[in-house]
Image 1 (cartoon, one colour):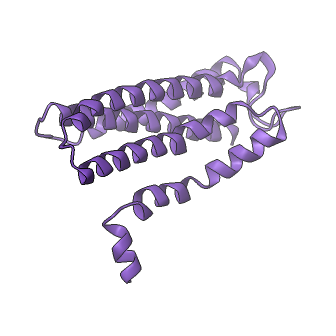
Image 2: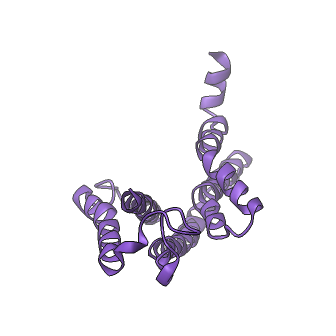
Length: 189
């Protein structure tokens, strides 16, 4: 069970990285005013990377130290003996670092697109709202996991649980409530 949990968590982070790379490629195509011929990376490649990389990480971890999985003293599913918990922490930190760099690169690419927009008040408000949504989604989906690395005291544990359990609520607020087409329809219904 601990191995399955390890696989699923690593897979979710790898998929988060794949989504960030897809978003980056989409933004790059928009700034070059290219016609988008396909939806990014081919699906078989996404599946191969999204599930293959976590399978390799978990497989190598299990081969190197199979006793690292399961309930042990002081750890509920990954042992801290021989620093086995780094089989999860290492990939998570790597994905978060890559996502931060992709986020900065995406914002840098969007900078030129937003600068080329007309300077009208409506366009300016739309640009600020798009930028706010991008930053909010980055914080909601990525930065809350950084709290997972600081599980040293009860405050960080509770904050991590609250923020991650409310990700769906935050995404609903950002993408639906703040959507100017959705809100009037919602009020009218």
